[in-house]
Amino acid sequence: MKNFRYKNIILYSSHQWCGNTKEYFIKHTEKLAVFLLMPRVQNKDNALRIYEKGRLVKEVNTPLSENFFLYYLLWYFHYIVAIFKYFPRNEKLIVITAHPYVFFAMTLQKLLRKIEFVYWIADYYPPINLTMKLYERLKKFYHDGLSYKIYLGDGVNKIMNGKIVSTETCKTILWGVKPKSIHRDFVKANRTILFVGVIRSNVGLEVVYEFLKANPTYDLKVIGICNDELYKKHQEMIKYHDIAKRVYFPNRFFFDDKLNELSKKCFVGVALYAIDNTSTIYYADPGKIKAYTEMGLPVIMSRTSSIAPYIKKFKAGEVIDRNAESLYAAIAKIESNYKEYLDSLKKFNKYFYYETYYARKFKFLKHIS
Image (cartoon, rainbow, N blue to C red; front, side, top):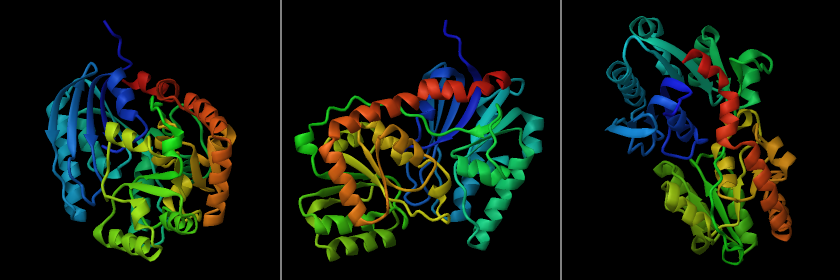
């Protein structure tokens, strides 16, 4: 009979690729509830999945709303229902979340259930407006009152503590990876660039469009979503650069087998985030970097985020300035040394392999289960 590391856990995750946290906790938790949440824009297919001893036993649709207040109110409603419906009062429950709304009425929650909260802070939002100021104050308020705190990047860690803290119960944990066996025919995949992720104004696609205009033998696949206004803006940029025939941009996510299949036709992944400290990426570990390495794609990224030093250290890609000239130089370098980059990717993926990486980093959970 299998001995599970953890007893009862609620985990917030996503239908999108998200560090293989679901896979890890499904394997090692006796009873696990996973909230799968899509972004507020086009937020369909939200669900709660219940796993017992590694097996999916129940899936419940948890509809949300694109309205800002209703979106978070419904999140909280589904969460409260879950802790009372699926977990007994006399057993300890660990809630792992990046969302501070879960902590509302925390004292009452703890009176009614034996809950230990683990705050996995995934982002820091620079206080550039009143909303962000209030949100960061809310995060800090709950952060300072909790015993178990982890951070998706040393940048977030330093912001929340005034310095980088590394103790058993307060430390940085980056995303883990689960390498995929994808056979890529480089001859067919050559000269097609992949972008995966939520599309915001700071992700650098305009730099890739500029590169495509100057280099007509390259193509681009954009797998992700944005709102209608931003999508229209991108279509206008694509038309302006006269690259529409070379850009695949369906404005939707693909998952698992479909995304893997699309990646076979690509040879490199790009993540040209804004590099200033007003960007949330500056402080954390963006998921798309490890999504690329999992699929066996060398990474070209801008000089930002907590994962860039590891890309450089393992030579799993190129860390560049955010312009078309630097992108061209990086692509040329990767093309001329492709096998070396693939070998380096294997070393990167071994270091962040989710089973061993998370077992080490989440050791403290065994003591509170």
